[in-house]
Structure formats: structure tokens, C-alpha cells
Image 1 (spheres, rainbow, N blue to C red):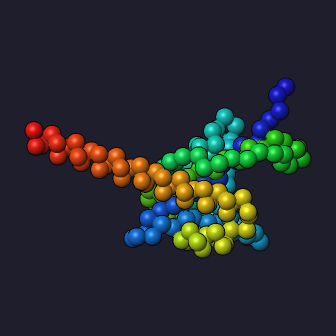
Image 2: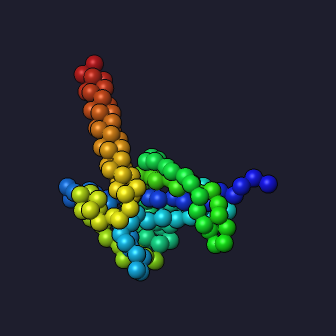
Image 3: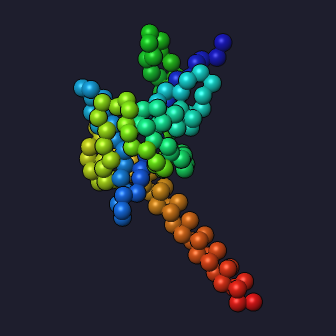
Length: 157
């Protein structure tokens, strides 16, 4: 029988607030600030687990943009030691802000998020998420500019 894999999604959720980008952090009772996490249910993908968690626990609709990074190792789940895969995703907040199940949550600017999160891995992934987001935004801007030029050329001919 193959080893069971404990799959965990970690959404790095951002939203635009006027000209600022804010990142979503959570804190469970007695814990430290971190990115939200969700274990995938049987038959559920890590992407779906991240979307579900943000909906059920964060009260928000989100859109997964890209995988940011991953790591693996062993984890104790219940009484069993299992192989664990943790996958971080860059996720855009679409709507909703009624946080339902986290003890504490907050939207903070990137620099503050980096100072608040306790985990070195979360900090690294937050940095990577911001770099990836900047790349995605630059690519979209370039595509929009190319589309505008094509439309202008078509109108001129």
C-alpha cells in the first residue's frame, strides 16, 4: 500500500486597497501570525483546499493565480507520521471580508506582513509571492499595451 500524503495548501492572499497591496494573515489562539493553512480532504487538490479554506474560514471569494513554492517532509497527523507536502499559492482576493473561523486576522502591507509572520518559510514565500505578483502584473500591463496598439493600428487602416 502506498504511503499516504498529507497535503496542505497555504494561500498567500492579497488584495488592492486604494494604491496599496495588503496581505492576509491569521493567528490562532495562543499561536503566532502566519499565512492561513488548510489540509486537503480526501480526493481534494491542494488548489481546491486553499480556495475552500478562504471561503469557509475567511469568508471570501478568491482566485488562484500561481503556485509560489512547495516543501515536503514528515509530519505527525493524529498518531501517524506521514509524508507531508505543503504548497504555497499566490491568491487574489475578489470579494468578501467577513472572517468566519480564524481567532484573529488582519490585512497588512507586505513589509509589515514580513515582520509579523513567525515562520521563516512563510516570510520567504511571502517575498516570492510578491515577486511573482509583480511579474504577473508587468506581463498583463505589457499585454494590454500590445492590445491597445493593435486596436489603434486596426482603426488607422
